[in-house]
Image 1: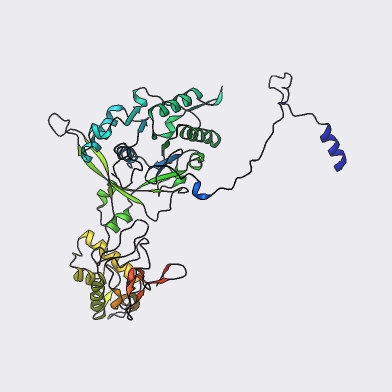
Image 2: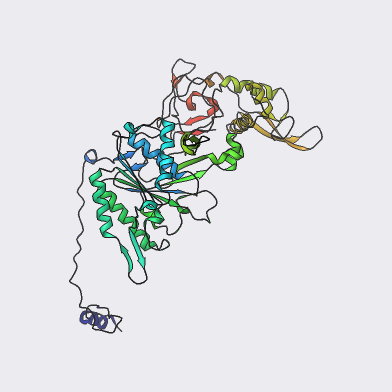
Length: 478
């Protein structure tokens, strides 16, 4: 068939009209559809409305976020902690509440009202939050007590359907109550569709997004992770269709402290499950973060027992990993270098003449204490990485090849950390005993006096132990 005959057939072809399965007459073609492109109107960027944040840089008004976590990781008590921070307007967990107290709705589809009350009151008891502090701004519902939430259904007989009356009623209630944030836990229980069908899940997620937009509120959807994902939880670890993650503006993931992290921070293995970290694995709306937010779970007694303290409930508290270099000055480094230079010390921590013993002696640490030993390991590793100490392989007295720690480049007078520094990304300036390791960026370019009495930003934080600053890229050079 040549091009002309094909064009003629195409011109004479009738509009497509599907034939019903019952063999009846085909339905008439629908009316023609018109599509029009909208020309972009150039705007002054200063006149564009800024994003509205409900809670720190984690919850944005008019959008949906997902919260992914393995079972018993702490997502429910974290959501309660966030809710109480919002309704009181207090910075309980390290996030500010822009514009003051908010109105929050917790809709739980797994726990009953009594259990939710235990969790909420335990947190209130720990933070000394009263009914006056909450001020009627917290709303709590449970599916186990009759507050059923099914935003969509999918059956073989009727196919996939969005529950439009529920969507309308939910939106109206959020507007009437002035809800700033609705938290649904878990997402899988908020519908009766096929959770593995991307098209259905995408439609549900987009419907939630419309509710957030129309109610001028933020919505959080707690989501379980796949049982197959036994390792690090990421945005792609959620169970079922990936469409939920794709539709959300942010995806917060919770991970329990790993064995390696516990060793690094000197946490006993049986206690590490009390700790978890949170970060946004789909941070396309807030400034990027180079570290996770850490939390620990404390136990609070409700005092509701007859012959004992009663129920003990978990409460989420902010936690920071110990800083191995807290209180360490360049003088400590000089002492370590001098001691290393005066003897022979091995690199492996199991050796009797391990270099870490020198660090412990200089700092007055107990090398047999798990926390102190973890701290020494981090300092030794960092100083080797920064080239102030080096690893040299050679034969020992028994003619066996071993790795020894030797002195690298020396610390000079410029190594004294200035008392005041330039803060960056909300990180406070370092004190005079500041860290000597390359920590998350803290403002390279702190000025120190040079030999000519001027100013120089040659070293990161004015400290050669941190390395030199590459002026063109602002990167550290070792």
